[in-house]
Length: 298
Ligand code: SF4
Ligand code: SF4
Image (cartoon, rainbow, N blue to C red; front, side):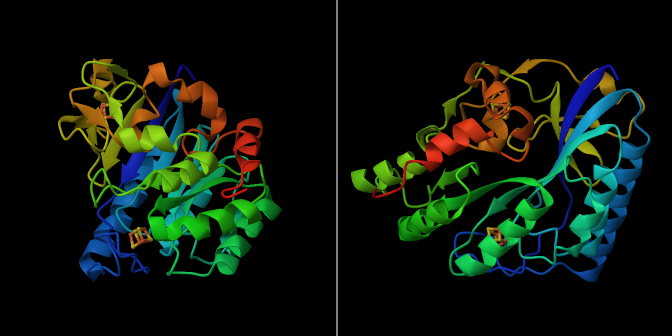
């Protein structure tokens, strides 16, 4: 295969079984029609991947809500993990779903970007799901929204997770730039050395970014954009001549504020730093273990 393409897939599904107070999709429900359309579009996408012969693919499901509570997404990930042209299939998830289907996946190629939501599930239950992934040799990262009231959960997670598991913290921005006290920042930064970068964002206008060339964002209709933040359409994945749309382009936005986006800016070196774990945001063991040795408050 001559080329590699990473696809961030986001269908219309926007429902979730959790009620996180910081999320617009909390306890949202999809109509039967939306779920039917979402499943049909997912099936079309999987069939397209199945037909790819000229390049290797990385796929990250980035649903608005929680997709893996739906059997269609579990079956899709299982199938994709077994396709030789799929280097990695990963999903952003709250890990709340039954895990038996993982036995039918290729553990070397499936991975998860897991978020712990304090208040929506217990730490023990979440860690039990992580242990299920560990037992199968499946890669994953764990993260938390960096609200101040989550500091204790972050400490407990860091103490309980294997040191090799990267624990990331997403900056909470809804309450303005003065939300964090210096002590809070020190704790989050000690747990996640990339927290400061996430909080500040990257001045990105005019800078190189691999999105639009070797990474794309695709919706259920196959409409492709370079990333989730830049809304300009670059083409449709299902058009026979779509490859012509894949070209280098500088970032048109003033700031890139999400890991899922700036991870693809070459000057940050994340492709080397994260290696095979880039899609699921998992740092390889030596880096993650380094962060793991620094316990918040200790
Ligand atoms: S689990 Fe994710 S999608 Fe669901 S309510 Fe929480 S933040 Fe939103
Ligand atoms: S730097 Fe961020 S916002 Fe800009 S094109 Fe890349 S991913 Fe998109």
